[in-house]
Image 1: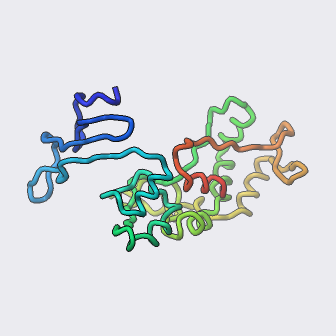
Image 2 (image 1 turned 90 degrees about the vertical axis):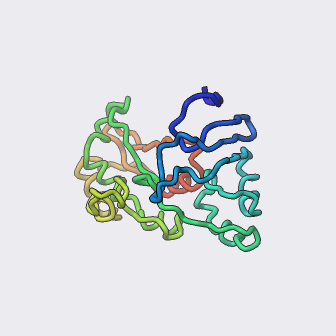
Image 3 (image 1 turned 90 degrees about the horizontal axis):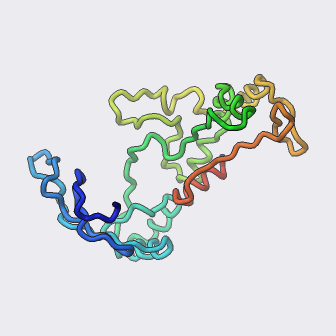
Length: 226
């Protein structure tokens, strides 16, 4: 069970208290990792995590009431955090991510609609979709220029990373003309009265994006731009 404080763990901290308003974690004395000097990790003996709603969380962050905050510190609020640093007595640090991409799209190649399934399985459609995404605009609008526009792949710090998989991927550029050419080549040339492309059966082609509502406003804004 999630709230079982007696269950074994390989994590650096162990559950000591578990409620709906806060959680307490204590240092795992059997944690396997050590630092370069041979000192056992982690350094911190105790963590108290307070659970509040998003609005209260943001107010506590800018008031400097937390030793560390990251779970709900969405990038959309980055200017808010920066402008309150001095008064709140804290620092805003941009941490390098460990994910291959902040936002990535995976098409359902087994879509229950046979027409959409055939469209999604055509690599030309997937290439067109990638070429139609303006990653530079998303970076400037949502991430204030701090992101690296690229294709979803492993992180650049991986020793086997190749630039042609990420920033220099041939389909990571913004090229709407080539995207339209690929869609025309597929035979998706008919359009409805609003200018949207039609499926082979005459219906308007719709691409429905499903994502978790708990992923935050930053990712929601990205989806809207796409």
